[in-house]
Length: 96
Ligand SMILES: C[C@H](O)[C@H](O)[C@H]1CNC2=NC(N)=NC(=O)C2=N1
Image (tube, rainbow, N blue to C red):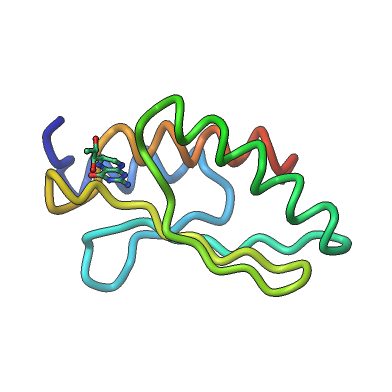
């Protein structure tokens, strides 16, 4: 899958609440906050199952109710449609 142009990524991000292009332009990022650890881990579980189905896995860091996420496509060296698709799923799975 090929790397998307910066303008294409920015256009796709307008439909994705809270997601932003990283300063180096190589990934998209978002921090999710939930009510508690149970809600955060439920979200991570839903995303993990979908990510494995897509063979496209997030970089993420969790502390209690906070999940920091970075999506990039290592094979392509940047952001691809797979990252946009996984971020779109995160939006549904988080309800945010
Ligand atoms: C071998 C395997 O298909 C690859 O390593 C997949 C797995 N998950 C992946 N996840 C992400 N985010 N980027 C990749 O390039 C990627 N590649």
